[in-house]
Amino acid sequence: ISGIGVRLLKKIKIKHFSSNFPHYPYTLSNRVLFFFFFLMTRIKSIVGQKIVIYNQEWKILILKRSSTSNGAGNWDLPGWWILLNETTLECLEREIMEETWLCVRAIEPIHTHAKTYIDGIHVFFVWYRWILDSESEVVLSEEHDKYLWIDPKDTEKYKLQEYRLETVKKSMR
Image 1 (tube, one colour):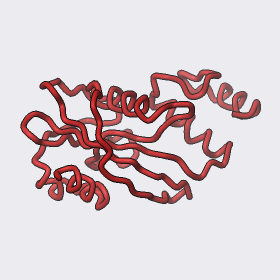
Image 2: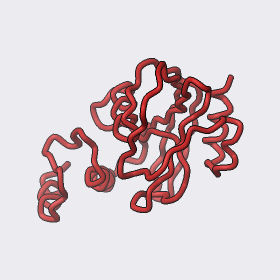
Image 3: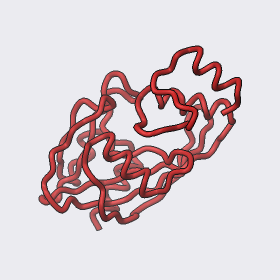
Image 4: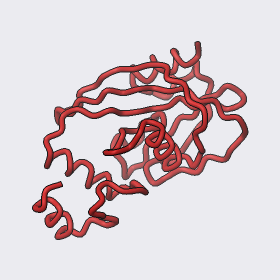
């Protein structure tokens, strides 16, 4: 971030700001910082990662976006995009830990797709499948207010976006 950007961010007093942008843990205020970073640097392409998590009963985890997050009320799958200087595995570990408090171990890539958001940012998504090796309790972040373990065949009932439905179908193979 440029010196002007750093001074501006400190002036508007964004919590958890660090000169080692972005830093861990990646809080909601850091998300604001991250979007500001995109505006400042004019980055137009990023890599996102999402994961289909299966439990021991072959049900998948879906998360409902809270009223304070983007896409409020929508059902989603865990994950987001890779931060600067972060590996793909570090991103998955961080995102899954932040959103669910589950620990990622073995992952398997299953699908890719690209999406362009309204603001012109192009995201290339890599989708993964992960099967929990033991029953673990899900603990949600402030980004989500509900979670469900559902049969993968029932995903259409929860109005997941089309490309997410396609990914869930590919994860069942």
